[in-house]
Image (cartoon, rainbow, N blue to C red):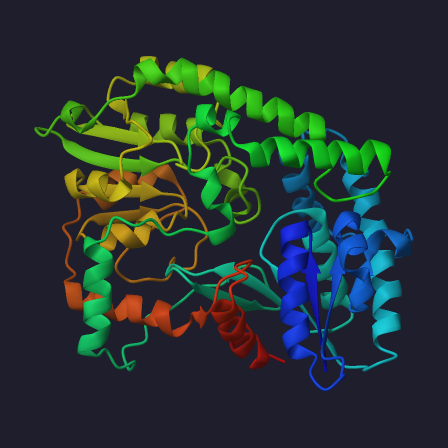
Length: 442
């Protein structure tokens, strides 16, 4: 069997190349990658275990586009500000044709193939996923786990949920791990995105940003090389917008001293505005400002709602819309985005989220957790899963009836579904444990 890894960027291609090298022992091809980045292909093509999607483009007009597939186009439209769905459709069908051409070549080596790729909502992700689905080929999405240096595997689907398994053994060692997690202020992060956890102003001085900009301009306009993330003007505009929004919001940021402890405090952490978790898993709540306005209208003046921007995307939500929300809803307070979420949770009575991992962190602090969207923990019996903000008040009035052992049992279920290793972390130790985890999957 040949494992086919999918890369969309150079750092992804370099990581998967190292994984392929470890899997391809004794000159036997056991792993290859298909890349949507021609710069990475030219860098690695001598290794002969990489395929360039753009050399194989072929519009597949016979591929049936059902409503489920068309809904997935929303992610590209929102991220790249594309108004014409036909642009995304054309790209999708061209990628489908290219994948078909490449798989035919790979099957000359071994007819049994399996796809692996990081979870995401862009057209390359969906073209690979739906090609695999149509041709009954196993497909695995890799998603960062709740625990650092671990990941989830999602087989032949893009949503998954973890149920409570009361039969799973909970040891004292597990309890120590979870207690340490409860007391730690370290955030759950994706290794290759750590640089994003800085203010928009600091990002101006990051040399890596200028290097990437020059590379993208060089690849696109001088070398005529293709890549999926080639919307340079959109990225530049969004970056400038984050700086503008951040500067506008700075005077509205409050610290924890502004919390009204006489009221019941609800914490709503903003999600990354155009993340897969919203555009694909919970598009109903894509407009978070509107969602917050609806939540506010459900509550009387005995409540205070505290909100905070996602620390990796400060300034990414319109400052004008946030300020209007604050002016219309005096019970809403905007906190400084650099305040650790765990400190906010401690002062809160409840956490309302769409599908953020903050929901699980809040359980560790014995808080009421209300989840609106689709998440891996939506079937956890300790949270309130609702589909409409109209039911929030009812959930808030229910007392918590769980204890730490119950929380630990559910965390243990999450841990049991997590594989060892991190995506795009190239140290030898991580590469070895990632390969060991992936090797189990067929």
